[in-house]
Length: 427
Image (tube, rainbow, N blue to C red; front, side, top):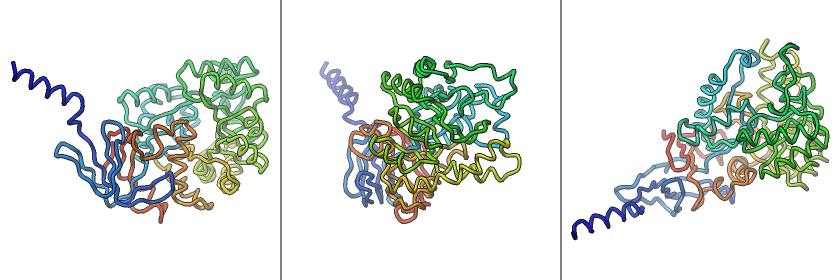
């Protein structure tokens, strides 16, 4: 009887976590994104999916614990990209693919793009527009069926008839039909409210509108406003009732002003953003997600004969090269900036390029990293869970070779990826 009680007590002790395995991550350099300083010789202790402590020096645990030696590397919080499209990737067949690919094809492709993104060090992304497969992808990742980043998704973007996210743009007339709010195409306030509610019903975490024309849609205009003010207001009011944010794709200035007036949470791209609009954003606390990499990429692809249809080629050549300069002005003005690339417009996994383009315009290397960690978490309203390496937060931790404070190109060489305490990459 005594022996039975002894083993019962031991079993209970173990079950309660007294002997739970921990991971000890020894970091030669640690980026403190709260202060934008590089700390030396720290040990991060992880248990289950959380950071439970951070110690000075190189500390080891017990024989049952895991030691991860990153003493020669630079460690930082998991990176975050606030504008990706995980369902697809650029290519000269892109405009044909929508006629030949099934949802299953898109799903299989998206699982590859998701893993590529995670292996590049991005443990959280905001997917801003697809067919709705992105919602299923998020669910599959959350269930552990697919390796990928934490996905905050908008499902299908919302646009007016003929707008940037009207899925029938460029089709022959008998294929165009008259898509409505059930697929994110609206005309008027009632449609706007219905479209938001439909996306929430489908499982979207955030709403995206195309406040102006865009570059890659087969439509003539790339920057004119696409919604009346009452339509924008209706979208944002309805989303706010559900407690979710609205992001606005916007190249033209008037469309940005209407979105900001309506209470938009973030402006994506912002190509023709004026000083007046920047001041509006500062007063309203509106976030700016630049996507410089997308702009420079489409300008380069436009030089390849046949890569884009003629209307797209013209817009890519005109609009694409301008975003980096706009970013530079917005940064110097003091607009709130979160990291975002529009990955999918260029190959997934090359998200690091945004760091280089941001620093070329005067942002410090560590501040650029901060936009992809702390600032991105703030945009998401998740700063209590992710974005920094602190006790009690999710163990989203990555490491690179080299010292990115001295050379931002080091962000290309991600050698370690942990998401919620699970190691996905360790070179």
